Length: 178
Image 1 (spheres, rainbow, N blue to C red):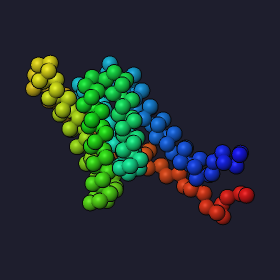
Image 2 (image 1 turned 180 degrees about the horizontal axis):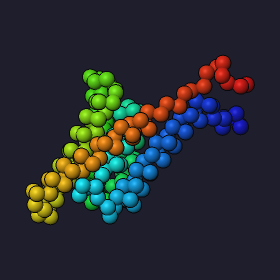
Image 3 (image 1 turned 180 degrees about the vertical axis):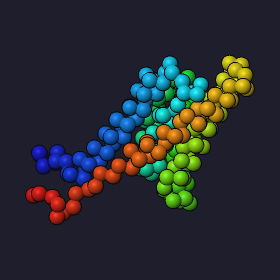
Image 4 (image 1 turned 90 degrees about the vertical axis):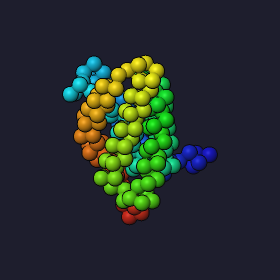
């Protein structure tokens, strides 16, 4: 019975990798809400959560990364953010489509990841602006805030991309102690 509960070293490394992804997401969530909740950079709040979700989804592929994107964007939506349903839709669909595109057409490298992050942020901020304009009567002059959000958030992407690429090597037969 106990031999069925044995976790192999490869499974431990997979658990560690997903734990690091979850910690990266929670760190981005905390920094975005606590540190940048009342403070702005150039008049805009950075959107770190979208960058983390997109980078992890691009790293893990459409299936596993899509599951992460769905769960993380659902947690982000249920945290009580403004226009959470838009974020749930955009942060689930666009990273998965970007991951499929990067795997099929583009090389899964830094520049395509930066492009997918830019498109995800632009669509998210654009849809939020449209929803606020039609339902709350927010003026179109707020588009400058959405553009500043892109300019403030995209410089964070290389650091998040580097953290999502941390490769936990799998043990080899020669390196394992039996």
